[in-house]
Image: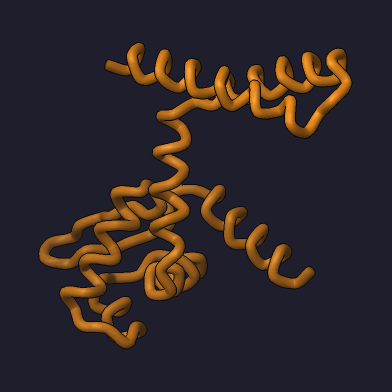
Length: 136
C-alpha cells in the first residue's frame, strides 16, 4: 500500500511540476528547478512527518503547553499538575496522555502516584526556539 501511495504521489508530482511552466519561461532554468523540487519532495519522509505532526499538535494546545512548561522545571505529580491548571482531573489526564503518546513526557509510577517529566532535553530546546521566534 505504501508503494502505491508513493507511486500516486510521484504521478501527482509530475503533473504539478509541469505547472511550473506557467512561472518559469527559460527551459534550462525550468529543468533545474523541476529537478531540485522533485529531489526535495522525494526526500520527504512520510513517517517522520507524521511523527513530527503529532508533536506539534500536542504542543498546539495551551493547556498541554502549560504542562510542558511546568515540567521544564522538573518532575511533578499528576495531582500537582491538576492543581496548577484551570482544568478538571480528567482533562489534565487526557492532556498528559496526548503528551505522553507524542513522546514529549515520560511517566513514573510510585505506588498510586504518577510522576511526569520531560522526555528529553530536545523538548526544552523546542520551547527555547519558540521563545526566540516570539521575541523577533
